[in-house]
Image 1 (cartoon, helix red, strand yellow):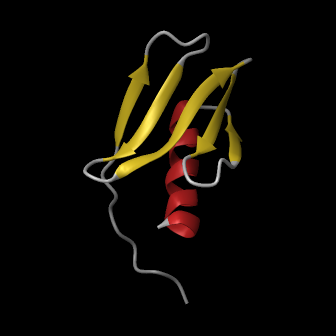
Image 2 (cartoon, rainbow, N blue to C red):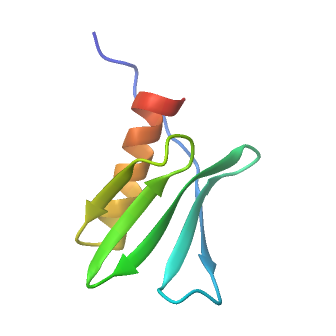
Length: 75
């Protein structure tokens, strides 16, 4: 059985003042679902609830990975 697809609205906020380029992925009116950092040419996403780490080659892929992880494990 699969879940019915649904749209999830998100905000991507750049965090200034960090050593590496960093973005926070937030579901409006709810919470942060994770943080993405660009380290050595790769994007490292850290989930908000479980602190799991996911790696991707692009920012868009990293955002999609966080959303998928959130929908499957944290929602």
